Amino acid sequence: MNITYEIGVIPAPEEVIELFVQAGLKRPTEPERIALMLKNADLLVTAWQEDKLVGICRTITDWVWCAYLADLAVFTGFKSAGIGKEMIAITRQKLGDQCMLLLLSVPTAFDYYPKVGFNKEDRAFSIERTK
Image (cartoon, rainbow, N blue to C red; front, side):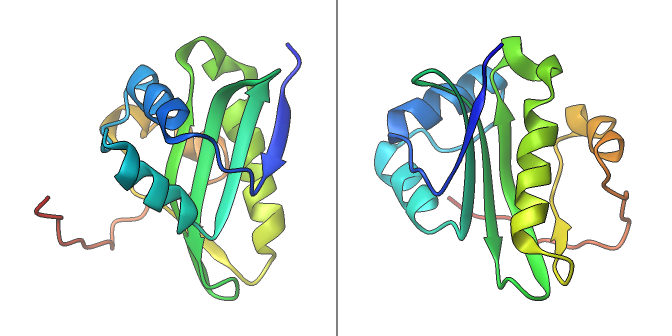
């Protein structure tokens, strides 16, 4: 399996929507909203098999204290190939040692994140979006 990784390449919103839907992530399906999510990301790592988007890791950060890994998605058929782990590694390398990486996980991924270096936290709070 020949996978290449890109930093800062913004895929077409339709490609990202297809990836999110196929990977089982509940995300917006309006191309305009996805385009803004991608444009406003501080760090975007993508995984490609030839010209097909097979993974995405979208992060928002201040680069010196904290970073929020907002999206991590890999096509189902590629999930055991280490693509998510590699995109996280690239993200951490780009963020550097000063920056903490945090995320909110869907329940089905609770077992995955400790395997790729995340600590489980019980001190998070959120206010849900209304739209």
